Length: 307
Figure 1 (tube, rainbow, N blue to C red):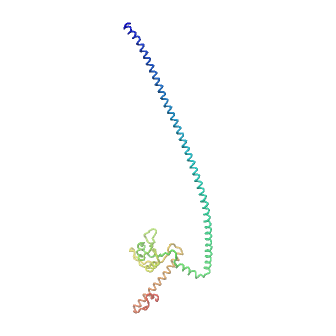
Figure 2 (cartoon, helix red, strand yellow; figure 1 turned 30 degrees about the vertical axis):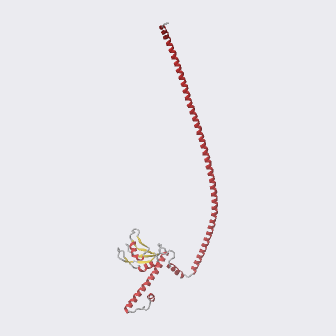
Figure 3 (cartoon, rainbow, N blue to C red; figure 1 turned 180 degrees about the vertical axis):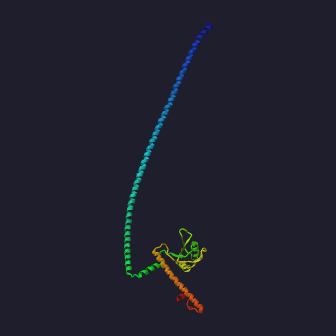
């Protein structure tokens, strides 16, 4: 066979062989694709299953945790309730004991109160009986004796809470606390009060009060400052009156009677002092005229008694 024929045969056969090869390659490709697709599906299915398993496990775990928490909470509540019940029972017992003790204590004070009330009633009855007896005795005594007793009681100062107060009268309208204190500064009064008008607090009403801490200073004030000349450099100097008064204020009859009795006694004492002073002056004038001392042999402390 010649070379030309062989070439022609080969060329005729060649396209058919290429086609076959092409088809084989296509089949192989399709098989490979199908295989890859199957593998991918398997791979995808496996993760989905794993995810589902994990989700189920998680849910189970959460349910278990919730259940445990619930149980713990219930146990805690039961425990608290039992402790509260125990505390309540203890409180009730304590209250019961306290109430019993209070009942016992309450009974004792009630008995004491009853005794005290009885004692007070007895004392009151005794006082009433005594007062009735005193009234009868006063009714039986003569009328002449009762005024003397009343005057004696008015003259005697009460022992409880004595106050040594003097009334200062005939003050000028310009007088104030400072000027009055300056006038009596040598005998150191405890308090000085000047009566002023309501409308004009700076205007004096013509009188005031001075208080001392003891009887001796009050007596000195009455003796030395009565009819002394008060000068505040605003009005001309004037003679002031210093008299006794009673503390407390008011216009009750008892207070008026008390002040009147005190000043009456003071007036009598001042009259006696004035008489003694006048006698002393007369004696001295007589001595100067005659040159003789009537009490030459008498001690000076006894000369007042001899007058």
